[in-house]
Length: 301
View 1 (cartoon, rainbow, N blue to C red):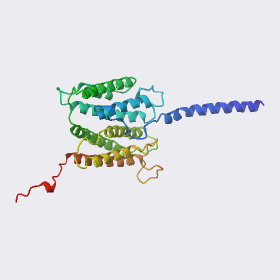
View 2 (cartoon, rainbow, N blue to C red; view 1 turned 120 degrees about the horizontal axis):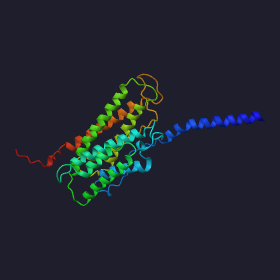
View 3 (cartoon, rainbow, N blue to C red; view 1 turned 60 degrees about the vertical axis):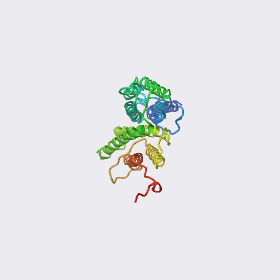
View 4 (spheres, rainbow, N blue to C red; view 1 turned 180 degrees about the horizontal axis):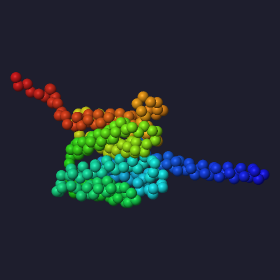
């Protein structure tokens, strides 16, 4: 009887130790709460500026649904060994640069728009325990700008001009993403687990999501340029596809070696290049001049 009781005790202790050892990795996986798709249903009619509104809703979604990883204490699984901090860093880097760009495109008054400039600075510095307060303050600044625009207190550039500036910014950001992935592909680090590789991969996904969400919130009829809608839809589709890969452990095997999941980094780089190509096509459409109808040309001969 004593021997049986001793086995029960040791078995229970072993089980407790095993569960304790697995608790953190399991929590790590559960907290790996990166969105599965780029949000495409943000309301356009609620905001005077639909893309400023999308930036606000992106930040609020992260704070309310997933929480801000870098604001977690170091022992929290969401702050360590997961892709969440990298993903949210990529997201905020795009939103900060977007707000900064738009601050410089204001036509009324002198210099940059103060609310957008403040929002850009707050978003860029949203790291650490004060990150959530800074992001909330940034959304308030963005809301002030949108409110002023709704009341026609300030004059913004026309939609097509704003879009051209934003597309130029996105082209630069996607080019930077491609360079980051290329460095990983050329790296000598080929092991199955690499924190830097995972961080780069998910930071890129954060950037893709931010760009895609901002573009999804735009009005398709902002310009009557021929071919615009088709090129715009094609770009959105490419960004949606580029965001889909979501490996828990990002692979980058040696060329020619076997890998169950293939090469995650090369796959994302390929999808990203396709999105860059579609972006270039859209930019070409925006800058092309509509050809005159041959039937309206007067023959002067």
